[in-house]
Length: 529
Image 1: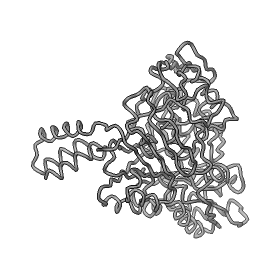
Image 2: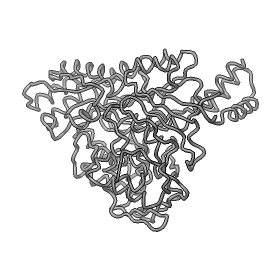
Image 3: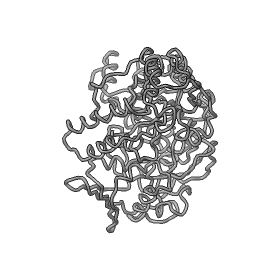
């Protein structure tokens, strides 16, 4: 019995079981609620972070073209690199609340158009420079610059004026936005000395670790920064991030003890891997989604009938069953699900309908030439198989879908957001405004479907200032229909984030916002003695 209780207690400590579930399991073993809670309290003390050691991660989502420039981060390894060496003004906790980081206080005007961020004092960059509010403003200026190619450019376009007054960084918006702190948590907005203008890829930040080795597509290593301002993060002495885009190699590295944590466990092996001794598989439902994206400004995808034909021709249930193995849910061609506040559950689910697909394809007047869908193993777990299933059902509707398999290396620089039809994924965002602003606002740099709808843009801006929740929900519902019925997004499934750790890792809890604790696994986990 003790072994079972110890096991359940460890799962509570790792966030894999709730306290109520533990008490229930303990009661089934004859343990009173009082005794169970006492055991949990003792276990919690035993799970205090352990300092020291080296944490190794085997990660999919790194390429030879990856950069330490925060503006350019577009996949999991670059995002984790930013978390290791950098800090943003705020973070978003897994429960959706704001965690003040370099901004220790936030105040807004009554109409939510002016925001003041009081910058934390005594924070040091890795190069010895002291953080100032001017560094914050310069960082925001760089991400507002078209030349930066920043993934946060869509967010920054809503800012009318920025200024510094002592230790306060102030932002005045074009219109009200009650969600601005969530936008400031965007992982691209790592604060750099003088904004990073001199050398944006230097890897110098205020984060808990300093960059030691930066070998894109191969490995990245870090050492603990002795002068980091926050003692509650950065528990290990060293971090090694090893790029392992091949799923088999990644899994083998964890099983052999070469690494302690891996991301993107393939759903088809998740259950089997979870039975392995000394390993834990963590599956977290959330806002992440696997997609096929079409550029609506490029033929033949500039024809909405053709886009609708493809949307009706994909069998979503089959993909959830065969690709996700149940680790996820059906999507509906807009990027919002029940993980988001103000989600409208009444929006009808688009069905798999080959007859409608054929009707729309005929109405499109397409000439019958091959429609090329580009994919790669690294696009998302099971992307190549998902594309093959899509091809089969599309061809059954008379749509000449052809698959082109691309190499993993260079996929996020040469294919995604460059080619007109490809497989991709999104980790989701904490609030609807950030998701739509980042990827569907017509002027967003990461508008990877080239969606351009003035009415949508207008509603997005108006929703930011609408304080009545029901009215705001109605606006988001209208926007969802626009993306769903007019856009270039085919969203067949929302995926769980499936990761695995060795049992010597402490502090690991899945995040509904993104993989590997939304990129924070290396800075928040520790190695148990």
